[in-house]
Length: 611
Image 1 (spheres, rainbow, N blue to C red):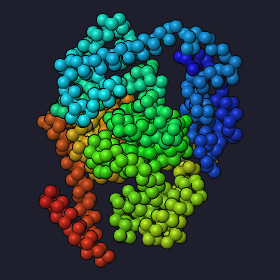
Image 2 (image 1 turned 135 degrees about the vertical axis):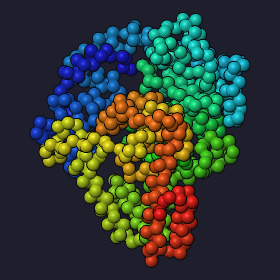
Image 3 (image 1 turned 90 degrees about the vertical axis):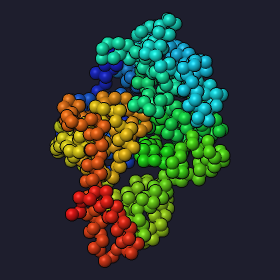
Image 4 (image 1 turned 90 degrees about the horizontal axis):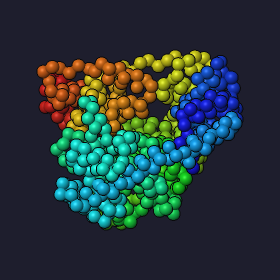
């Protein structure tokens, strides 16, 4: 196992390994101006979209989106960890990594061991408090309300973090743990005034274990429903905890996943624990962050397929779609379990026999069939417009299916469902393939941003992307939510994604709300780090100079006004569409009646529209 390698050694290896030489041993590179280009080593393509810049010692693959330095390339190509990649390249360059920088380094080992010991001790203390502390009654009442038995809570080590400002801090110091360990392990934080306080206070605590069973982090669940705070607070990253490499519950469920050759991907920790209680053991969940390529590679080692079992709400379905994209890159089979609307695995297993849930898992459809079902549900396929919209969306899916037999089967399924000829659908697929080829040839179409001085596929300089210029209402809402995250729960409850569809900057708002919905929000800086360069540049400026809030308005009232203005503008556009559609002779009687009812509803809500 690779140990902690000092930064100076890492930099020495980096400078000793020319990225062109390293990548050239895997990929046939061709000179293209000041750079080198090749076909992507990560996915099939006919036109080169993979570039290596020897001056900056970086690579970028515009078709897959991968990019980084020489270490990142080796990690992707050889499925290595970072220390493994450093050691491999050190060996290639003839650099000896001293034993003191490996796992036997007393200082590095002592630091990691103290963090692990601290996490284990705190987890044990919190677990005892959950059982015995009178102040933990709200946590016990919450578990009881969720029909969460004590035996299950003990099996997963659930605990209670006391409400006091520095109760955990004082306890840990009395037990001999250093302030440095508490700060490094992110169990304490420091206020702007310089006061140190407990990071977790007054919450039900769920310990997070790594694959070997060591406690590496925590997730704290809010107990006061009236409190204006995030429902879950998760540990920031530490030397022993990297979110993108941790799958919650894997320390318990790994054997079941290997035996089943299948992993059930749930959205939350409570869902996983409920599945475990009911005997569904091959389950995992991402830890307070989006599902990553590293997560997918971990599952690839253990299983052949993944059954995605996320909530049926908008946030759950958005997260499911992102997970599908990541899993498919690792060539894993993906099926989608359709949980009834308004339910999640936890609530369903509390209300229904486990056999109902098992039937849902058994009947989970291949992701292509799932997409066809959900798309047909959102479009009116009895109308020519609706069938055309579904055909266009499904053609984009068919165009990406590499297996000829699977492609043909799905094409026929779509044609039968839409009652259109095979030739008509094939024409839509050809259009989708042409669009995909144009995107490969033009990296800017990927919306990934283009590094300064980057070359296009034909060797000509790319035109830099224009700065992000969001719609004014979206900019005001973004500014408000970035600087006042406490407003997010109420905004999310009332927000309708349709209000911002097609507007500049809409995707940033949706990603921000989605991060909060999936407990992946830590702060604005962490959110920006996960954005592309163009978006990060814009948000940095927005944080530097926030949109002004009217002096006479409270923040809550201002948020309400922004939402109403977004809704009103969308309703005005919707009203115009409906009025125009009513003039069409091709409109069915059923649609005419439906549109008429909707027009009246909009006019009642906004009497000044349409006059």
